[in-house]
Length: 498
Image (tube, rainbow, N blue to C red):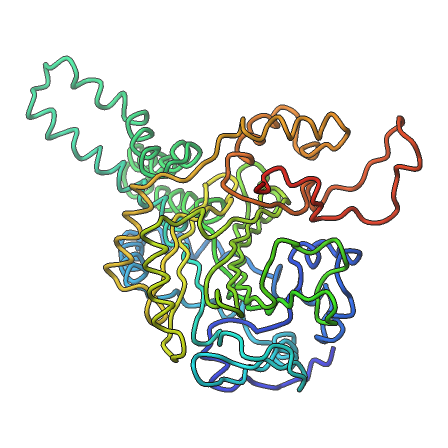
């Protein structure tokens, strides 16, 4: 690659706030170099390769600041956290680190091969690839966008700390009110952690978060309690900085700039991104705008030696009568790609409000933004949708943002009964189609319950994107295929309607 490329984006590209748009490329195909499932011709037309998508968009270099930053941060953290929280509540976006997201020669190459948006009247646009019209009259993605909010996922540790501090602050007044001789008063301190656990479980509807979230505050409290004198103060600052560093390392996801893709759902087109049999066959539209958000946590508690990447995709219909509407939200669960219907996260009233907004904007240039509220558990960082909103402009108002957070805390996640699908899964496994053999045996029952309990409708890579086909001693050689197994196999869709 020529390192002297100096092409700079124009003001309009800089103002977009996302990379792209590009022709769609499968996420796991790019990350794991699964060439057998994609249409390599489509990639060559786009001027890219799976490696380019992986290194620049899906798994770029990223890291944390040095420990010295956290020593200073530990002193100023209460003020910084409050200030950041207020700004995010008001819709302000955090600045991106130049050292991580700088526009270098590789970014410039992306810009050169990006699709061109030709805006038309009525909120539509024609989309061109290297001068060739590939999508006429689709929704203009500059007018109707999609955004993923990580407010709850990023600040839940601090919300949990606030709950713990609030409970601790109440012990003194309660003791004064009932008297120290009251039989219940001594237990207020002893039951500190169990009571905080129950409160957090009710707030976040996640047992892993309820267990882990108070631990940083408990550790910092113990550090401060045992520190004496100036030496103790210095040691407390250093240890507090270490705790905050570990919190950032394990618990705080950071989002990369979103990337926008155009999915052409026409297997006769040279822009179709898949080899036959590997595409999501349930898609009904011809064109989709796919907003891909990738998040990074430098490590997870169960695998502290490697980075933990997660992604969420928002599939917006770009053509037809349903144009502008979210049809699918895609996330991952242990290398399995799960597809959720829009209706899995919205009630009748919310859908009616969204339809009203979209119907009103038909034929206009009114700017709207889909806002997806995301949560993540603190151990595995699996993304969970907690709400879908449609905002005028490019963000929710401060009042709607506050209400969305309250809504995420008050409303419980939608879950399905795992037993409803367990028998079908067991039947497949009896036939030799192991779905969870890449998961340690002692955890399979628990993980199967969490997997089947999610309100998804379809899955891809049901055996895991990293799983390789195994050849067993028993069985006919005629049953063994050298072709890659379909990642969207219709026979394995245990939740497919009908």
